[in-house]
Image (cartoon, rainbow, N blue to C red; front, side):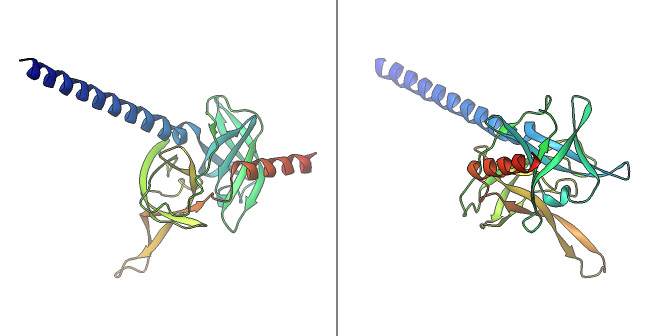
Amino acid sequence: MLFLLSCILSYEAEQNKTTVGLEQTRAMWYVNHHHGYNSSVKISTIDNGLISGHGSGNYFKIGRERFIITAAHVVSDGAAFFVMDNGEPVFLETVYMDNYYDIAIMSVHRKLETIKATEYRNNKKVDILGMSVNYSGYPADLPKVMLTGTISHSGISYAIMQSYAVPGSSGSIVFDNAGRAIGVINAVRVGMYELSPFPHLEENIVYVERLIRFDRKRIREILKLWRLQEN
């Protein structure tokens, strides 16, 4: 009888450990995935006084510094760029632009109130093949969405993510499950049907420019140089 009671108590203890472990895992997943969701911004373009398009990006912090990382092509054409915060437009200034690697860093005219800056950390591993990742953004005419995916090719300069993206997703930061920045969404594969002369988007093949070279030290140096040039 005592042996049976001991077995039951041991089983219940193991079940409790499993339940606690699952709850901790779920909580960690929620926190890490919401790094991208809470910091995601919609970057609108103004051209000739009209909003002509939009892309996505993410709002980061390093110490007291606040900045947005997006794709260079999102903020390369247009007279002005802004994000909405607390019901009003907040305009952006270009801090850094690399058209070759399609990466841009933007400064905001004031600290954002309704969008949470997430602490900037980048994933420096070259081989991330098979890694589960996530991103948030504003694809097409959809509201902000959070999507998950898997890295199907990895390298120093770019990765390919098997997920979903369409115009408007460009500039979104792809995060790993520890909340570290993998890279910037910059393109979707374009394919051809055999019986059609027109190209089509292959929305599940997403190109991501890696942020391996952009560690915290380099970001700080870029922001410092920009401030010196502004003054």
